[in-house]
Length: 59
Image (cartoon, rainbow, N blue to C red; front, side, top):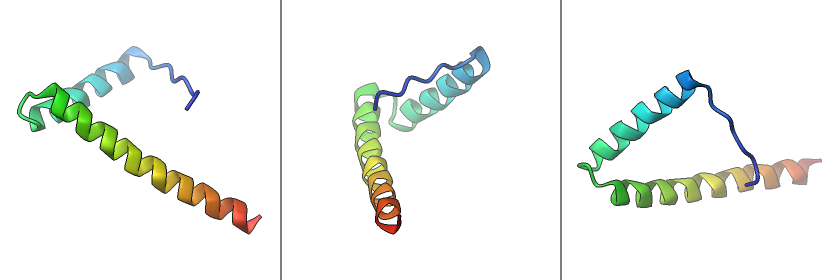
């Protein structure tokens, strides 16, 4: 997780628009939206770890 991503202004604006929609989807509750994002990221990380593990096993 030590990967830093630099965004240009267009990417930053797109990310902000998505974040605004995600929070609106949670009826404006930013804490609730953040909690869901943490859970979603955890699930995605588990899937990435499984894919990476299967790649190592086939080498």
